[in-house]
Image (cartoon, rainbow, N blue to C red; front, side, top):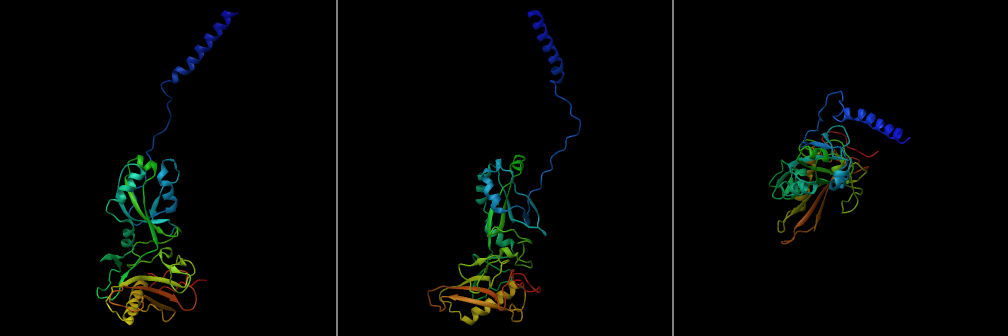
Length: 302
């Protein structure tokens, strides 16, 4: 009985070896390998398709996340942000972001320049601004910026880009493009500064795509001792509004009003006056930005 049992076991071992041994060299798999096609590096002007807020949240632990930033040309699609600068950096995610932040490229300033504004004396103005303007205007956009790195697979493949992405401060998606908004383009509604009420203040700011009664044209200052008459301040605001809207008549034949707020309202030899230039509708609320409107209809709220 024992000899039969041992013999049976030996037979099973031999049979197993006969099956396994021929396969130790590896099985041949039919077919042809295809290399992975990695996306090209993002370029200035491309759009981030995901929410910038979501991308920022997963970046520090992106090695274990399925969400990776993807970019495509801006067009008639919802976008989470737009690339306004690209630099090169290697290392882990925090190291790449640190190197980008110390590269000499200012991410937020890049967004202003991409929108068509020009840096003059530490402030941003229109390209065709007049040096003789009595008010030192400083235009801006309602945006946040952040450095975005490639996903884990692209980093492993050697991609070393770090993209500065500008997105609406509200976190909303947008259509169109920020690029050239103040130099012949159109500002997406989500990048404008608008107020629910007709008097601009520190509260009540809403995206310009929402119903609103005022939109910021620009903030400005008048150095102490300049003694600029109020009429000249209002005229400067009126001219700036015309340039920003793209119409010779910024009131659109009386449908809009250009407002000016000056604080303090009386200049002294030592006080710097702060000026707010804004536009408001006279009949019903707006639901779109007026920046770059030109001859298109006024975007009234339904």
